[in-house]
Length: 176
Image 1 (cartoon, helix red, strand yellow):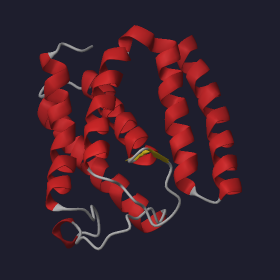
Image 2: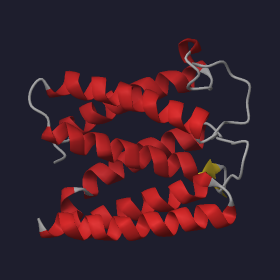
Image 3: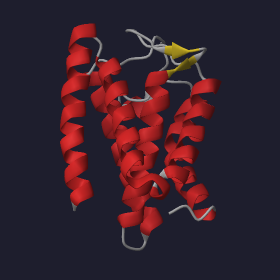
Image 4: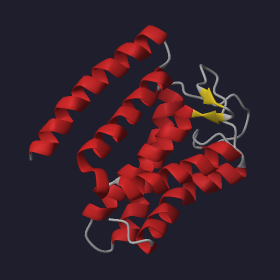
């Protein structure tokens, strides 16, 4: 319980700082990068070995897609080489969160996490694109004309399969 209270307190501070920086810089993506990175580091600081392996695997998944496909947004892009930090950090955090939810589910866990993953992915994509105006600098059509996932077909396939494949790999490797 002490760890959870510690997380809540530190996350409140992280949220205030990241929103302030996003407001000053006038780019929400910067605030999200800072927020997610700080939360990931804070969780690792508290739970270390319990989250380390899943964090490394999630980061590798995110690194594969962000190094393969160059994400260029219509607003500010924070790049390290050709890798955009916004999708790198976002994918890493999203996959780690999905793994943590998966570990708490009752059987049939895999079917439930797949449904949660797809629903969450669509919700995050919708909110990011339509409400936060986080859009790629491209003209790709959206997935099923739903107004989400404006990317090449291969990327759409990766988006839909990344969560379930990540869960299967972490299960195979017996990551806890």
